[in-house]
Amino acid sequence: MDRRIIPMVGQVVIGGVTVMADASGDITGVEFMIPPKVGCRPVVIYNDTSSPYSFYWNFSFAGLKDKGVVALKARGYKGKEYVAEDDIFLLRIFI
Picture 1 (tube, helix red, strand yellow):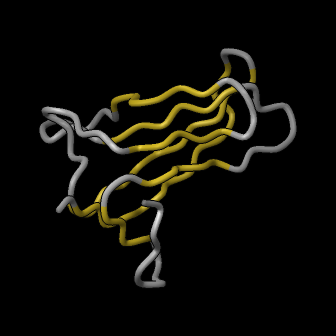
Picture 2 (tube, rainbow, N blue to C red; picture 1 turned 120 degrees about the vertical axis):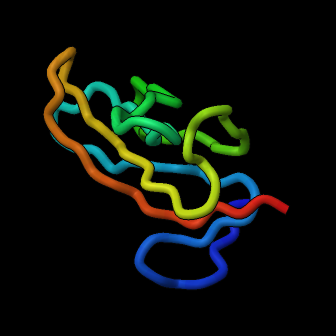
């Protein structure tokens, strides 16, 4: 669907959404992660090794906080070394 309905800090999403991370310089891959319902270590849900770094998120995970207000994390790598991180906030609604 990729439909933005209310401009705000973060996004309100109904259905699937394309999640993208802008990366420059020597970034060779990006991991997209979401937090679990219990605990605090984010879980990798997608790993992209070619630019533009993105994936279409239209699925759900048992045991992960992927509905409602979601703090998705994008982590950039140079080879195997972690070099950058950013948070993407969205309100994810399924009908």
